[in-house]
Each structure stands twice: as C-alpha cells, then as structure tokens.
Image (tube, rainbow over all chains, first blue to last red; front, side, top):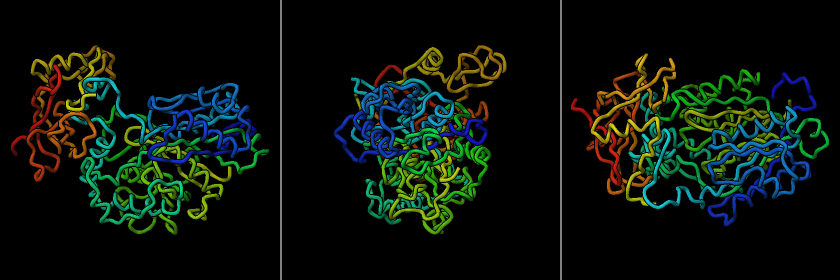
Length: 387
Length: 139
C-alpha cells in the first residue's frame, strides 16, 4: 500500500466495521461471534456477503477459520485468505495484509476479523497430567514463568530501574483509559478508578497489578477492506491506510531480547513515519495496544508520541486525553473496553475518523495511529480520513 | 490438567542435550564448535557461521537483570511457595546471553536487581527433569 501504486483505482480502503457485544461469557461459539461481526461489517459497508472473496484472521487455536466464517455468512468462497498463528501482534497485520491483497488483485472484498471467547473459553489444554511445554518456553515454563503478564512484569521492572518509572506512572494510564471508557456503552468496565484504587489493586506479578492487565472478554470484531473504486459507490466514508510497519525479532525470544526497556516499536515506529510521510505530532487519536499499561508506556515513547521516560508526566499533565496532544485509547482500550486481541482498536480508529464516536468523539480526528503487539513483535498502522 | 506440578519441558532434538546435562547435575548451553558463540535457545547450527554446535558446561554465574514476584497462581506448580520469585539472569559467558530461573531463598525486602547470582541444579517437581535455579551470591 502507499503512494507508489500505479493503479489508483485498486487503492485499498476500509469501508465497513462490525462487532458483537463484549461479555464475560458469550455462551456462543467463536464461529457464531465471527459471523455476526462479519455480517455487521459487510452490512455497515453495504456490500452483499456474496461479494466477499477474501479473509484474514489470527488466532491461537481458539477461533474459526476464514473458510468457516465466509461460509457462515453466505460467501461462495474465498480467492484469498490467511489464518495467522499468533497473538495481538497480528492485529494490524490482518488489516494491512487484507489491503495488500486487495491492492494486488488477489481479492476484491476482504474481511479481517478476530473472534474469541477470551474470558469463558479454556486457556490451557485439557490433557491429563502435567502441562508439557516445548519450543523456547521449555526453558522458562518449568520455573513457573510462562504467561504474558509475567514476561511484561519482568520488562517493566527493568524500565523502572533504568528510567525511574513508577507504579503511579502506570496507574495514570489505567485511570485515564478507564475515564475514557465511561461514556462507551460497549466497554465492559466503565466505573472510574482512582490512584488509591489502582495502588490497592492486587499484584498479579509484581510490579504489575490487576489494573495493569487487559480485560479478557468474549466477542468479535470485523473490518471490511475493498478498493477505492468500489468504495465510491458505497454508503460509508472510506478510511485510508496511510502506512503500516511491523517488526519481529532481535534475540529470537522474549528472554533474549537485548534491551528490556525497548520493544518492537523501536524499529517499527521510525519505519512507519518514514513510510507514511507524516509525523507523530500529526496524530489526533492513538489506539495504543494495551495488553498491559506498560505496553502503552514503551510504545508511546518509541512511536514518538512523547519522550523516553516521559510517559508518566505526559499522562499526569493531561496530554493524553481530550484537550491534550493526542487522545490515547478514547474507547478505554483493551484495559477497559475489552480484549478482542487488539482488533477493537482498529474499530475505534475508524469510528473516530468517520466522526461516529458520539460522546467520546475526538473533534479533531483526522489521523489515527493503531498499534498492535508487545515485546519483541508488533506493528503500527496509520489510518486517515483523507488519502 | 494436574495443577500441582510445574510445567514439564518437552525436549526436542536441539534441546535434548540441555536436559540430559541437567539430569546429570551439569548446566550446559549450546555453543558453536567453530566461532564459540553461545546460543540460547539452542540451534542445530550456528546463526553466525553455520558450523555445528555442541553443548558445553557453563559457570552458572551471572548478574540478575530483572525479576518478578509471582503472587497470582497463573501457572501450575509452586502453589505452596507463592509468592515465588523468577529472575532473568545475564550469564557471564557472553553479553546478552540469558537464562530465566527461580530465585531460591530470597529476601524480598533486600532484592533490587543487579545482584550476582549462581546457578544450582535442582529437581523439577513432578517428573524426571532437573532445572537450573539461582541463588544470590554473598555481596
């Protein structure tokens, strides 16, 4: 994607968004949830399901495949699909890759989706006996060190040591996002929290507390991508993808990542701005991937929204909310709206850029940053109301 | 799933020698036979020079890079030991070479990171494996 395309009519744009309710116990299958979200997105776009010929998702063996979802909504089959094995680091990849596929002509109408029973579904295998872990994690799991909140806590402490980052700095992120979630009827947690509430929250893995962690929920989000040529006849204002950059790497594992105060974003951030030809100062809405508060802190630094070690002050001074420099996670983010593995960030960015976010509308919203992932892998995507 | 015992490793062809060594009381890591660069997790061949690798004993000493205090039982095992401490150790053998491991007998009040530590091979509850845990060395 980008400006280099010689075929302007195939320029990919986002034309529809859809979602289910987010809940603690959906009582439905991931397929049913995905189909509802995909139907809603196609309906929002005004595209008949029979035109759906592309699909992209990511999952950890907890969801439904593009083939199943396309079938469930009435498509006669897909000319292009990807089913990525992985976590929220792919939340922008599925949208960006759908755009690339549309632009390349591999398909004409693609739906990128994520569907999961993140709260009610099973988390570990049902096998009898002890859990057995292979791959890179065979070296860490036997020590009782296996889950993302543990890895992220390990990295947080290093940032605290090097930059003097405090728990209160993290708390302000959680508090601000919860305040943003207040008017959002789709958010699972909307009650305000104070710094006392935050500090009284129980430690999950010290130094991270309960309010530092994303809110696991059941639900699905879907996003429809098609060509600009097709979009001209559709009902919604098309949203443009100015750029996408991702990085996976260095050290080959979480434990061997060289600088624990840094993340994928130290590479993806600068590359995104270079590709998109805009600067961090131009961003009005930042949907920062927030599996944990700490992820917001580091990625805001490395995507250039604020200085290194300066995120605590940035939130404390009100620069991350309405009337500030940039509104961070106006929907409440994964911490408060719910953890649809990050694809709900793209939903919110599109809503804001279309001017349909109602009470929480950012009045200046013209350019939105959406990030995905944490630690050694992730990406960032820029969405805009204008090309 | 049996939540009373910690996760057991599932060795593969590249890692089997690591687990064989710990079972015999030695801590060995994967090293290139040509350029002598260490690789963790282990690789069949060196990522720098493509030569064969083998497992070589390490000192087991290093510096505590970071640590967490696990207070919420999200992983099976060590439930009676909550809260337990897991450290990430920068090994002396090579810059950036790390191993995670439980920290044994730590005084949480005094722990700050940066301490010198030494590995100790201990049995892994629930099976036939042994793992390298770490102890803080006297200052």
